[in-house]
Amino acid sequence: MTATEQQTRVRTQRSWLRLLAETRTETDADAAANSAADPAGATKTMAVVAITAALALTTLNFFAYDPTWLVTTLDRLGLAGLALSLRATFFENDYGEFWRLVHWASVQIASYVVFPLVACRYLKLSVRDLGLSWRGKLRHGRAYLPLLAISLPFVALASLRSDFLSRYPFYQPLEGDGIWPYLAFWWLLYGLQFVALEFFFRGFLVHGLKHRLGFGAVFAMVIPYNMLHFQKPLLEALAAIVGGTVLGVLSLRYRSIWWGVALHLSVAGAMDVLSLLRQGWF
Image (tube, rainbow, N blue to C red; front, side, top):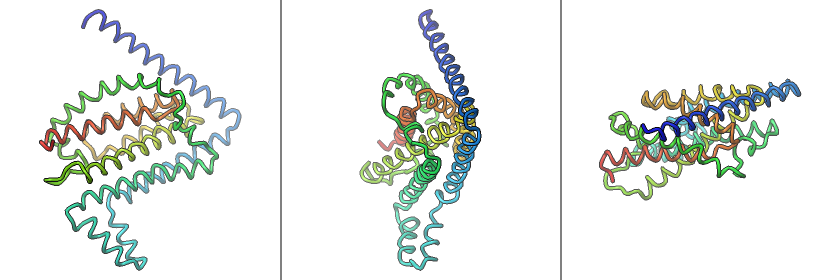
């Protein structure tokens, strides 16, 4: 490493430490002020956000992964024809995997978005204050570029592993299929799922809990976020702890989730493309 490279690395480290310290100080000060001004209100907001998150994640866990419940429910409601049609769609045709993934992503998006919107309506919170604001956020993109530069080499290394290739992309195109329409539609829905995920974890949870927990809201968010990765490869689950924490801090600092969304989409896209390349699909 040259002297110039070493100086650049030291400056980068100092910048991140300063950002971390400033974010912690400002967020904790705001939380202390909010709690002092309205302790009951701050506690109420924290409780509603936490319970809403628990309900959303419970719904996701029990209803996203297996659409059998939907078929059974329709049958019990007397809609046997529709139930049979959906059963055939999900389990009895060549594109059953695609439609099961559509169901998975749809329930994920609904869980991540609908529950928080109801809670925001009850708490009279503006969703713009939960990281959805665009105004003045373009210049913050440079803070995320080092994260992308760090992530991509690890993705490339992970793509050499058999467990990675067996899992990504979630939708494996059938032999002879092109990108359109199934893979393209899946990528669109997959991308929307990441927007919803970032809104839920780095938006609703971080900004919903910060008024009471301050900087600790980041670490409260990281626990359920990491648990989502328990069925994934070990390295990915460990990376989720680091990535979730860093994205949570940046969301607090810049009050926006959108560059986090862009980073997540870039990494997820690279994972799918590299996996398909390794499998000789392109």
